[in-house]
Image (cartoon, rainbow, N blue to C red):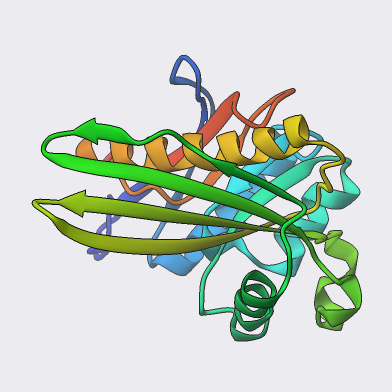
Amino acid sequence: MQLGHTRRQVLVSALYLQIHQVVAQAYYCGAKESERPAVATLIETQHLAHQELTLDALHLIPSTLDLIHTGGGRYVVVLKPNQPHLYRTGTLTDLFSVANYERVDAKTKQHGRVEQRRCRCFKMNASSAAVRWQKSGMCTLLCVVRSREISGLMSKEVSYYVSNHTPTNQAQADELFNAIRGHCRAAVAGRRGDTSQTGCQSVGRRLTDWQSSSKSSTR
């Protein structure tokens, strides 16, 4: 840590999801906004732009998505209300459009709770996106509804994601759904390990093969 700095260095790592093996790393120091260029640099210098990647909502910016799309890669990125126009488009699409592909996962029981996930895939209208997104290739909206029952009490959480890949069959849609599932699992594992699950995720030939995370480091 440099003299006079109160923030520790942060290590951004590209992690092979299936075996949790780190394959690339980069450091950044300072406030959280420094993470964006650090992740973009990691993607570019480690030649990950032609791979299939997932990213957290922090990295839903045109420059990073353009880098992946023009590099021949695919991405799945978390969509949150901090992108109001895209988020509104996503919620309206989910409410009033029929999904191109859908999957309902089996219920799981663990630690006294029952959970179930319903995944939907929609084709996005490219003309509805702002001009700054035109080079990103964004064309698919993904919606995941997580239902949970604990001691008879029901709750529901809805999450949205965007991608530049257009599935043409159920198997391809399932790959996107599985990528989201893998991303969420890695995020939970990261929090349990006292890490900050931000960064990017590179998934090799399939969207479930790679995952990246970032964690604080004093080195």
